Length: 405
Ligand SMILES: *[C@@H]1O[C@H](CO)[C@@H](O)[C@H](O)[C@H]1NC(C)=O
Ligand SMILES: *[C@@H]1O[C@H](CO)[C@@H](O)[C@H](O)[C@H]1NC(C)=O
Ligand SMILES: *[C@@H]1O[C@H](CO)[C@@H](O)[C@H](O)[C@H]1NC(C)=O
Image 1 (tube, rainbow, N blue to C red):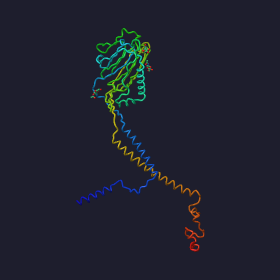
Image 2 (tube, rainbow, N blue to C red):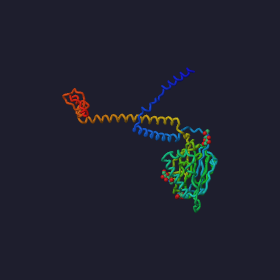
Image 3 (cartoon, helix red, strand yellow):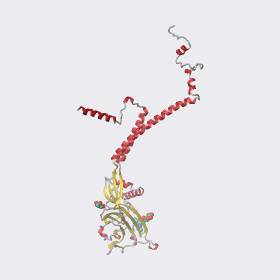
């Protein structure tokens, strides 16, 4: 029992000696106003840094990875909503791709009569999408990143329905719906005449009863996307409005599609991003501009897959940086204070010495010239006298006390 006590005591002693924080008695500590001011500044700096660090670490970041697309799905959805300034019975829309499959196996798009001119509210929406797309082309990805993180789409729901009834017959045709196409390069197009399958391969558009003046491939694209549409994302072709005054005009879009997996806290979708190049020209066989008028969308799928992940920065890093900030600011401010004290010391002493130097006399002369120490020069060995009594005693005068007389 006793031995245990002893070893306990020595252990305590050893631990005491290891104390890296020796306690200084309060009476040895000195507080100054400058030190207090510096402490307040230090604390404020620490608070500012800590708040900004917290902001930095609560924000998430998007990580992009690239890899070969190994998904074996063989179908890709194409979502289309566009309006062409031509009557429905005069035109046909379909898809032709490298598999040479029957065009009707991909599903059929709905065609319904519409007005090319938009109602004011619809025009507003179109202007808005155009603005967003313009912004996106200039500031790449900025909005998409934001939208991928939010589950509440801010740009809701496509073109609003018409709220007025224009006079006259519908002059345009709205084509909309979803096609499930093979995951290979293909060509979606709208041309004059309904398409009929041609054995053994492909198809033809029969345009017998259509006059040249019926041709008008001016069009507006309200929505064009691949895969499941992500809520709130504006795709590059949305809001496209191209109007031509020429009946025989060809519009071509070349699209590179990139499969994208989005895994954010708000969204979990497999979608497709794409880049578009647009071209248009007027068909004029005499001038060497050949082809058939219409709208042709050629798409090709990339073999690379983009993975988008939303990640928190690691919390242990946050802790490490916190310690670094607090300790660092403290020790730097301590160093600063010692430095300023040191400089202040040097400055004040220099200044005092400088004052004596400025009179031009040496230190010794200055001392001798001082009135309290004025001594007869023939008595250099005489000790310094401090008071009148002592001086009187030296010169042989008796010490007289005024009171004793
Ligand atoms: C392939 O993609 C489809 C949709 O794009 C998805 O439903 C399916 O789970 C994916 N398959 C694999 C193995 O990732
Ligand atoms: C055709 O393309 C050119 C740019 O190459 C563009 O300036 C023009 O507006 C387009 N024409 C039509 C009718 O869209
Ligand atoms: C096609 O329709 C648009 C909109 O109605 C019109 O502005 C344009 O002049 C028409 N083009 C032709 C060649 O008729």
